[in-house]
Length: 224
Image 1: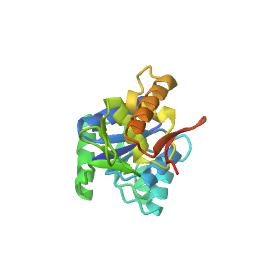
Image 2: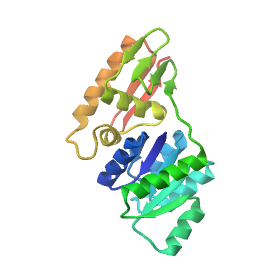
Image 3: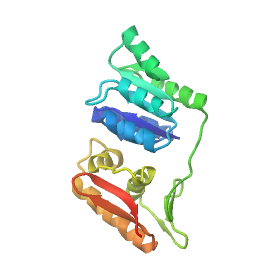
Image 4: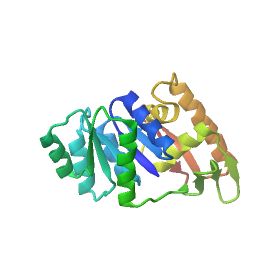
């Protein structure tokens, strides 16, 4: 199962990510509305956890935009607002359920499970791009003729890149999702793991490369 967390409070996003990962979800986490829209349109998720109060586009705009784009992933809105008009606005915009902060871990898990049961459980076993495939259960990265095992952090970095191969993934997103909001990881850690993965792509004789987008992040590309 796969979840997208759209929450501008990085510590809360990290907590939500850990809660869902404990329930065997694979999670992407972003901190603003436009990034949430980009991830929701570029990837397939089983559930989206969406904060209402975001720094650019608010949660109402996000869910309205993805629904207009025919994305039918269940959306659970999370907000400090508990007024009836706000709940109605969220549901009318296209949300499937609504939770008011603070909430218990048990209630969150129950709501998420109810939404994913309603939508049907679809579990991806691999991610592929051009001539490489990442096995999500074994952590093996494969080409037509070779296979190499990835460390847990190499796996998470590659998974994020493969989840949206045509979308730039920022260093901040990588740090948040791979090391966590409470870690001391910085750009140097990201660059080191990108270097490790580039070596493994060369070992596989893959035509896929990790392109450095200056002051933006990284994106997978194929060599002509």
